[in-house]
Amino acid sequence: MIKNFLKRITGRSFHGGPDAYARFNYKVLLDNDLLAFCVPCASPMAFPLLFPYKTPGWFELHTDHRQQHRFVCINQQQYWYSGHFLRTHGEPLGQLMLSIWLKQVTEGKYIARHNIERLGHYLSGQSKDSSGSTISGSAAQLKHALQHYEACRHSNKLLAGQTQQYAALRHKEQLPQCYSIKHFGSQQWLHYTHASRAFTRQYYYYCYPLSEQFYLKIRFAYKANLPAYFHYWHANARAAEHSIMQSIRLHTAD
View 1 (tube, rainbow, N blue to C red):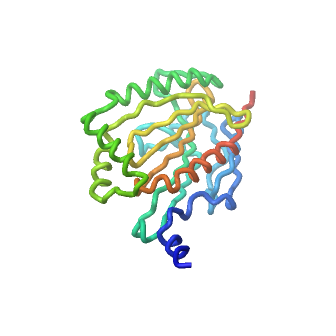
View 2: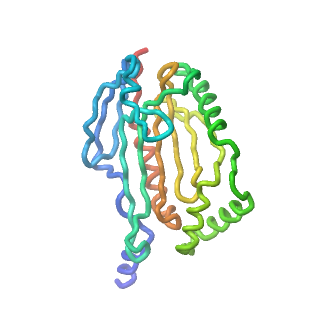
View 3: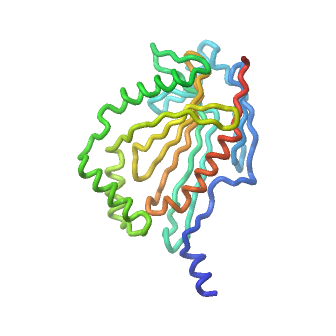
């Protein structure tokens, strides 16, 4: 009994994350295309069902200017994970963030509707232009930090000072992006990953070209507030990502 009690208050489990029993169905009209998806959501967002992005001036009017890349947000969700108090001292383990965006290519660039390969070439070129050097800090220092982090991650030996050190280094590495085509049901997606902040953040992207200028972009962002415990909830978040992608259907007019 005592062993079970200690396991409950110090164990390797987690609380929170996407609630599979609180899913909400969304249907969005992207001009003449219908986007349907089902996501865990405690309080469904109120947002317009019609996104007439081909209408002159509409995209510019609704563009989100808070970040460098231009997009219109279709849906956004956050799912928090927490752990046992004696291990985490009340700090959240991390969060999974879902973002569904309508994006426009840069001026002078073109893609093609339904042409995933061409979209991949475009995004690959953008990545090279924006990243510059793949490593902008001390390569030896980063390599050593990564190796030490991996060695300590599963043994829970990361100290507060080490975590701060990793946080200071995390922005200095741009890992190469790997593009592939993934299928969820009959739906194809251009898939790539990004781990620019190696110790606290991972990104998984799914994209689909809608026209010569616009494409759909879905991002799953994994933010580890306590990197030493990332493996506690990572598998659950990945399963939620897979479930959400399975629910997404893009019914095109043609």
